Picture 1 (cartoon, one colour):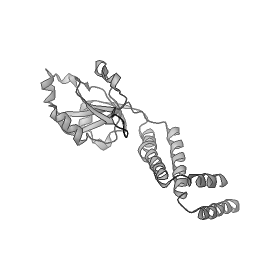
Picture 2 (cartoon, rainbow, N blue to C red):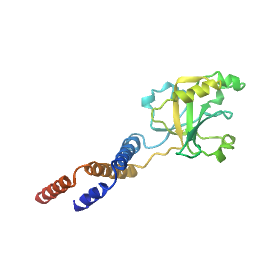
Picture 3 (cartoon, rainbow, N blue to C red):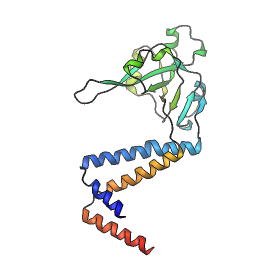
Picture 4 (cartoon, rainbow, N blue to C red):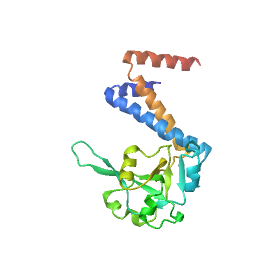
Length: 223
């Protein structure tokens, strides 16, 4: 208890904004990474392979968090850039988003392909200005994380303006994302949960914290 009190008092030295960011980070790790990945491990446990038709026919909520699509690939070099910009710095490339198609459907030319609704787009954050130059030269394995997200409206508009037809239920797959092991998820849940609680406690006055931890210590001794 003394250690937890010391950590909580130490956290009080950080400003409210930093502690707020800390709480947001803990919540993000818990609810968007560790808990979903743990549920995936318990229910599925491995990346399953799907065809494009299986994706289309499945209810989006029934698809697993991580999956592979076996019969689609990017065509040409049509993509949308996502940029990241720090204050007073030049924007840098953070990801690209591009449509993928099942070429076994027998497209005769690029216009034939563009007239076919696209059902899957891929977001790849593991790309740079240098690797982008040869990105589409190699065949890509379409595998990653699907968090029930559909293509966003801005990206959809850019692709439509480029001549592509985009399905209203076009899903977004984050390429290359890997799920955490169950043990990692549990450690992150425990660590983030404890840290988040201590940050919240650090918002209380020091006198209240001393009383609180003393009461907890008495309770532990009596028990």
